[in-house]
Image 1: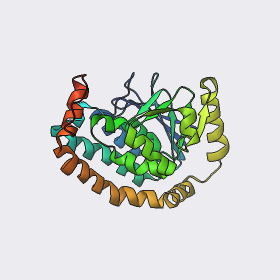
Image 2: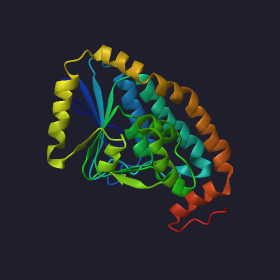
Image 3: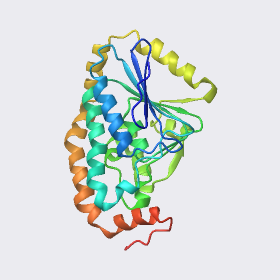
Amino acid sequence: MTNNLPNLAVQKVHNGSVLRLTLDAPPGNILDSVMVTSLSHAVRAARDIPELRLIVVTGAGENFSFGSSIEEHRAEKAREMLTSFHGLFRDLTETDIPLLALVNGKCLGGGLELAAFCDWIFALENATFGQPEIKLGVFAPVGSIVLPWRCGARANDLLLTGRSIDSKTAESIGLVNRVLAKVRAQQELETFITEKLLPLSASSLRYARKASRWHLNRQMKHGLPELESLYLDELMQSPDATEGIAAFLEKRPPRWSS
């Protein structure tokens, strides 16, 4: 059963036990306000499906997601953008349904924040991961919480350099759970779902997930508003944040103030 939303394909599989959400705006599957709204709508609706055991998030085409819209990062749009984007993660936090990201191609910025928030990341061999916000003179509030949760202090390398890593490196630091060959990816995902999740109680899975993510959920509830304030009320008042976004949109090197 498929029920599409703007920039998002929504499909129930395994007799309604699994919901597949496909970011559907290739080639970059940008997490702009339209797609974020669709994701929030789909996630909230999923709460009312008692038999649901898993939400799979993936990207259409050759990439998972290039991340959030850089245009929406401009100072005059940043507050609205962050409110919407962080609202999606509040919806994901409150839903308690296990999440799995199936990552193909580039998984960058807000795309990595979304994937890293999931309980599992299954990555194709061609996948690359990066949190490049620092190169634009800004930082990733959600990434600053979820990347250390997934891979500890090694997250600082991604957050502070903005570099990208391949799927094998991501697996070695604990960011990725499994690296899959493209020809076997769907089969291995189906085997995981069928053998590991479908035999379990859907309601008990939600309680177990809520318990296992207790510390992360508290950080998202109490820490994310602090980081959002740091971003909007301090960072975005600095000249370099404005310059970094402008330079990217104008396709030129940034001219930092310091």
